[in-house]
Length: 201
Length: 201
DNA sequence: CGGATATTTCCACCAGGGTTGAATTCTGTC
DNA sequence: GACAGAATTCAACCCTGGTGGAAATATCCG
Image (cartoon, rainbow over all chains, first blue to last red; front, top):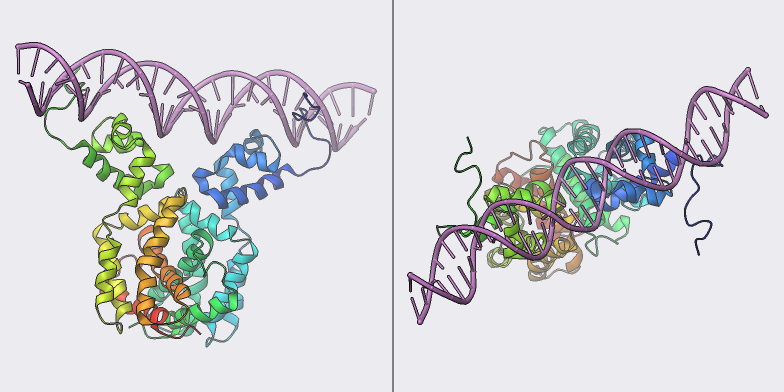
């Protein structure tokens, strides 16, 4: 045995492989699966096919990698908010649900799971969620609808959307975890609609 | 110095102090604050004022303590379900929200946070949540209401209630985190009502 | 081609934390 | 009162995992 590939050769790698990018990709996956504490630098490095020390070299440590990989997600909340706010207000609830599920499904649910799972260990992640849901999204929509109790309405919307994400991506309760988007949007859309434009009692 | 109380005396303790119960109480608190991974046996033991080895002695290890302290909660889901099912079906949504918030608020939110935070690391906790929400509670209510799509309705209810718990106890978004129970019940009750008895589109 | 620099691996260190076994002290029973 | 057993503490072990430094190898630039 002692195959020639049993361990990597030392020193700089030949090709122009982007170790940094590989680490970020692997980190997104592992953080989404295991959360901040559960993820290990060694595990992430192994998935990326590089040495654990590279995390230190490129990001200064686990913390830095987390900030780079998870907290700067390709969400683009502003884009979503713009698009939602541009349409009519009458079916905003259903459109919001559709939009969220489309984005989150496309990432295999990893995006949402990564944020939620990291809330356990990271105050930063809570702030990121708060900004995303309250300020950029539902707060803006509720304001546009011209209702009172804007903050309460925004948090109510957040509760339903976050709960949907929990059940669909984290806990994976069936049948909601596998239901197709139109069906879910039809069921939950009216809830958001009422939270935004309807009476609260 | 060298105070006589600087370290505990060795051997069996004099009074009839219930070390086991003290550990369970401390474990509930610490698991709720930090989740399964974040909690340490040493920390729990310190809060209980006993030696870490007692966890092993009484529960066989951290795993056992978790099962005893968190998974067998004083929820009594069956009691809640009985009470909810016994009343009328017309205001079941509002009554369910009121009941949940009453139970969870009384424990300082620790009960809910403990379950959710432990989901990260524990398959068991997911099963516990599934049984609690789907089988014992909402599944039963939806069945009583005699509607179709019982499973879907139950998961929809779970999504709203779990989301409420997340926003109120874990993320603590205001104003929902501090709103009084009747106000929250008035706002969210109709959502559950529709998920249980209403049309789904 | 030759040094300077960047990239990468290996190795070792250290801290945190779960678990174990021996020693010690209390309780109960005859 | 003596002895069996239960409860408790202490000290140590060992694994996991993050981090830092030295060595090795590539690329870049003159």
